[in-house]
Amino acid sequence: MQQTQTKTSQSPVHLSPTASAEVKKYMEEQGSGETAGLRVGVLPGGCSGFQYGLNIEDDAGEDDMVLESEGIRLFVDPFSLQYLNGTEIDYVTTFQGSGFTFNNPNSSGGCGCGSSFTV
Image 1 (cartoon, rainbow, N blue to C red):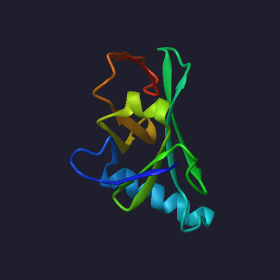
Image 2: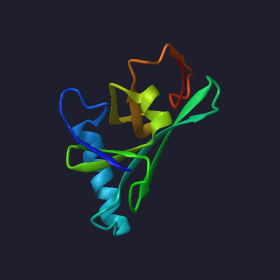
Image 3: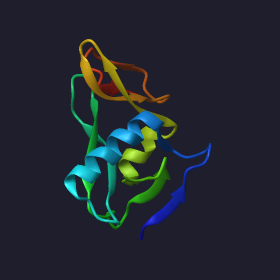
């Protein structure tokens, strides 16, 4: 059964305005429907033990928590939620390139790639 929660200061995961704008732009380019959202996940692997995953999906999974942040629906599975609580996802542009970054208060370390972390 899906659980729905809207963005509040206590929201487990939220997007920065810059990240939200990038996701909206991508979703518009892909012609995503009304029920589409951004899957935010944590997967075992990467050079530090866990890695982040982002993907546009048409609808939430059966066990997903459905959040809303900056006008974007976020789908988070129970496994990932335990590692993402309090995480802000941002989008940055530097001389080295652009991409999403994760400010995760649960992370105790990471690696140079920025997409892998340890708890």
